[in-house]
Length: 106
Ligand code: FES
Image 1 (tube, rainbow, N blue to C red):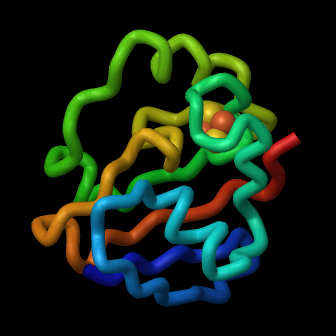
Image 2 (image 1 turned 30 degrees about the horizontal axis):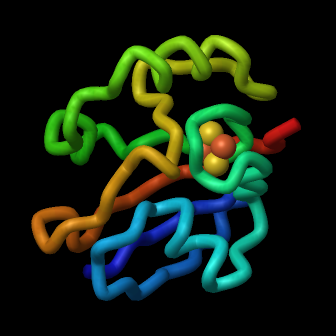
């Protein structure tokens, strides 16, 4: 599957992944700017915040309570389509997923 990350300045990066990893892991493995992931994917830091493209929002699994709580502490405003990219596991069904990056993570 491939994921497209759209940066706050409008530039985009397409990241290929074989799946079995989170969107955050795919992004950091590609050295993508814009995702810090300070806690390494443990849903503890909120520096992997993304805005999910509206067309994809309903196709993602529901968020767990810890993700929901942590999203209240993001550096940029939480919106209805906010998620933590470390909690989005990439599956073949998510091929083409579009995630927008916030202006900052801290
Ligand atoms: Fe820390 Fe996602 S990497 S919450």
